[in-house]
Image 1 (cartoon, rainbow, N blue to C red):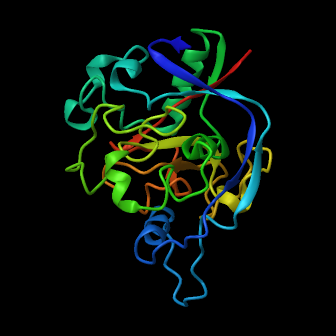
Image 2 (image 1 turned 60 degrees about the vertical axis):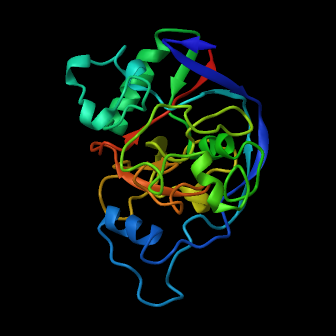
Length: 260
């Protein structure tokens, strides 16, 4: 199915184990999360939180459609004013749209919902990880060998600090591209979500209390990492918080939809 240039792939209901047993690296993944939230790092070795644990079974109760790629500049400009585009930040027409806030991504979804047979929205993080894993239970959809990541993702080791046309790296087993790297992708869920709070039926966690004391819903989950991130961020289970009203050039999204 194609709507406004966005190609959707149909995913069937299913079960999977969400999360990872791999602890985030102190000073790496965990430090970035703390920096985003304005928190200090834990001092004792027993205080570090493995953000992708505990492993838990999640059921995707209903099938859904998901974008084969991240939303591109060309697709975004069908909705937004092309004159506002920055070539320096956003890259070519076929590159992923960056600098998109969570709020603007939601507006895009509403616009797309009016253009076709799908009710379009952002994915829950459980739906995102289900799609990213494509039936696998390893750190990446291709296994445990980090050296293969450059075949599937534009990330810090091969990107030279910029994004690239979508589908210019290998896709996963379900034909989805750029699930790792290029731009990090907004999910519907409030922060903190993650494995400890994600509803077992795969819906988004939208009623979370904010860790920083800010109003609930201020921080939203981002998945997949970006072209400026290390392999630690570009894993199936990795997630970080982002302020829904702010965006860097590496903040983008893909959409999902359900037949009305």
